[in-house]
Amino acid sequence: MSAWVVQGVFIGKAEDIGGGLSSAIDKRPIDHRLWLWPQGLGSDEQGDPRFHGGPERALHHYPAEHYAYWRKHFPQLAWKAPSFGENLSTCGLTEEQVCIGDIFRWGQAFIQVSQPRSPCYRLSRRWGIPGLPEQVQESGRCGWFYRVLRPGFVSADDSLELIQRSYPGLTVAHAVQSFFHSPLEHAGLQQLRECAALSARWRDTAGKRLASGQLEDWSSRLQGLPLEGMRA
Image 1 (cartoon, helix red, strand yellow):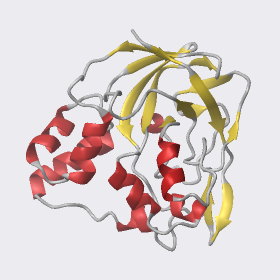
Image 2 (tube, helix red, strand yellow):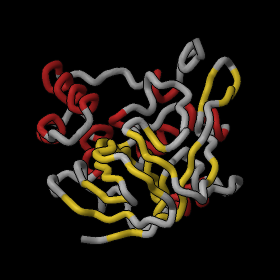
Image 3 (cartoon, rainbow, N blue to C red):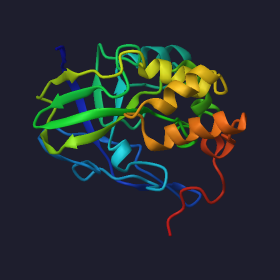
């Protein structure tokens, strides 16, 4: 199986970003090994655990090569990892090369691709770019999440090795296409619903669309609500 060099590992603390909102998108590089838990990496935090983190989204991977695209479109900003709040950065591994359900060995841990990232309004808040989540979604440069199958120590010195591929017909890019770009297309939704390795939230949403023929409202996720993400 193939292996990829890890270019960066990042964790962050939840901080106040104004308006009563909390976010951990500003992460810092880590140069020592960390324990990867089923809930996440080391002491990494989430601004709003209702919608971020958890066993199905324990680790966020964003391809480093996507930053060339963002530097071209927004040259006023010095885009580089971890500008999108990722935990893991590599080159040579994108949404087109990764499949839902892929299992990787990273250090002592086994991790499995669980779903693409659903971009949210915190990206706009962080970078001061209205509509950035919509642009990320439309571009397909969303990155993806992992669930942790076996916890263990991991570090940037450990390569990412693909050890199992069970759903070669469902790349992360294809899942993004079916979920965001053709959100009511029956065949794509059926494929998502039937993929046991896809996160329960995405499978449930695909099932609801198939049953109702209607698309859920994305405005809270993409644009935010006044009380979204407030600390208790």
